[in-house]
Image (cartoon, rainbow, N blue to C red; front, side, top):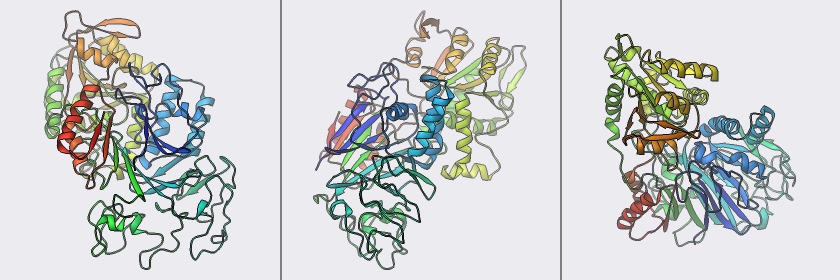
Length: 604
């Protein structure tokens, strides 16, 4: 059993991520709907200048968001405009961050009309389905012999990032779930009527929430605080502690609690059977006496009952600030794997803070300004976390001087975040401390504020932004400026580059990937050539500033990390499809995976 996956982006490059899992002729699910950047385009012509959704969405029952970077969600407004009315599934942190990203994307690339923006955000809120990690969500299919469940697992890329497991299995229940679960009698469940004529029949009512009676987008259900577009094309998503109550499971096994089905990995493990990861989908050994995982969870691979298609999204690397490293799934029958750094490994990430400090101190020695292009979400917060640690350990160390020769130490250095969006993201990051890793939580418990420290200044208004650019151009005192975009393809960083690139006292420090066709890539490529320049908004700017590229700060897994992610899958994929990488990176990773996993087909 192999399922078709259509790739609508991030095939020949690293932006525009959009992949469609085809369950059958009438049903599919999208994973991400990203914006193209630079020169990258889709196979059917969509690109940075052509953003409309160019593929048929008639069969798409749900959209799953791996994380909220613009190259994974930027075309979401265009998907909604094309008529998509199904659920938008993402992690709880991503659900907090996604509206901020979409609002900014609309303002920058579509319209400043607040009425249009508010209407789009209201539509998004209606369709958004926040899901906790490891919970299974049932996606309603239309007249299909299959059932589809989706689960998110931490990817360690940015806060809220996830890789996605799409579990397809034969629907063994009576056609359309026409028969009620054993012991529950008729379609009345606890006095609640059911919509037996809806598109996705057999949706059960939960805790007194009424349901849509066959109409489209008629009602929004709130189940445990999750907004659910229950009358949409993809009806029938239930969020009851991750359990599907509409699949004929009936009463729970004696002693296992309500609707906790060990064989499906639904819910938390029964007392005495170990942690959730021991039972819920085989992330560990099976309960004692129950045989192997495959005996418990729906049979051997050869069984046609289940097939797991895993989409990696963007995987993080070990030792990332605030985030735990991703853990491989227990099983993946098909794997769609990113390959951004498929041809290289990162520098030692454990020593990167020391290297960042050394780079910054060299850059600041001549009293200039250090520009750090960084995406508003993820990279900015990581840098703040690292800079706070450097200041904490080296507060009185002199590292620079003002235009008048006065020494400046780390505790006196201005750290400027010039991005309203980054400021909002950072505030949400602070509110989502339960999702931080253990080290970050220890810092907070020790009275430190890793994302909000004394030396930090945030610039909100456009007027203040222009004043800051003009002030720094006069070279009165050193500073570190962090601003978007990370690839210098837009945002406030462009104004800083225009004003400061021509002065040799200034520095540009890149800490992330620079895609082909972006100004960031050109600055890296041409800065050390005689007369090197970059085009910004159609004008030529000479590069006299020093340019640095810091290794170890990528939010993406390196080649070794990607290979380990696949090797640590207990039941290996039949096929690995490489996406989200340049041709050279994909071919290099393909070669390594083929050597390490001779029984797996690796497709570029």
